[in-house]
Structures are given as C-alpha cells and as structure tokens.
Image (tube, rainbow, N blue to C red; front, side, top):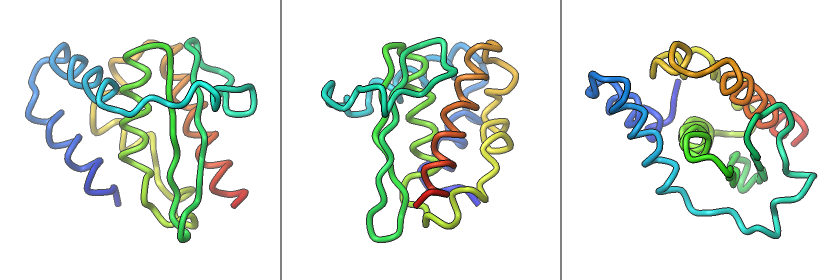
Length: 135
C-alpha cells in the first residue's frame, strides 16, 4: 500500500488528462523539493546508472525510512520527489515490499519515460531498497 503522499500524487496524475500536464506537474514536484547540500553530493551518495547526476542519501529515524535526494535535471528531481513520496516514512522492514514499478505504472511513468530515464529510476529504487535492506 502506498503512502498518503504518493496517493495524493496519483490522484493529481489521474486528474491531469494530458501527459504534458503530468510532465509539468512532475517538474513542479521536483522544484518544490528542498535542495540537497552540495557537500553531501559525493561519490558515496551518487547513484550509478542514471544519465543525469543523481544523489540519494538514505536515513533511518525511529525505524522509518527517509532520504534526501537531488539531481542536476529537473525531470529527474521530480522523479526523486515521487520516490520520496512513495518511500518516506515507511517502516524500514516494509521498504523492500513496495512494488515501485507497479506504483509508478499507476502514474503512467512506465509509458512516458525514455529508456535512459527508466533505467535511472530502477537504479534509484535499487539504491533505496539496498539501503533499507542494509539497515
């Protein structure tokens, strides 16, 4: 089951008929995200497998998963914001049970992202899942 924050995004995407409107909304989600401190944008937080520069810094607080993320590309920042809505606040033990591909498919992202961006999303999800599993 998705978080309330992700459900809100899904409802908004459902309301927006045109993919261009969804794309703009995705960019706005990325713009609304707080920037990651450049000092944290280091090789250890960089996500390999993304065409853009992507950094994810996971953290566990009170048994719940969260992360900071950033990218040099607006659309990718939006994708990070969507993943944050999907995973933030979830109990660590449940992170690996979330079917990110199915949840993202609800937004139509599987149909509208380039192969490179889809690979990048998979790399980000893998990093999130690995971080939670290691905790």
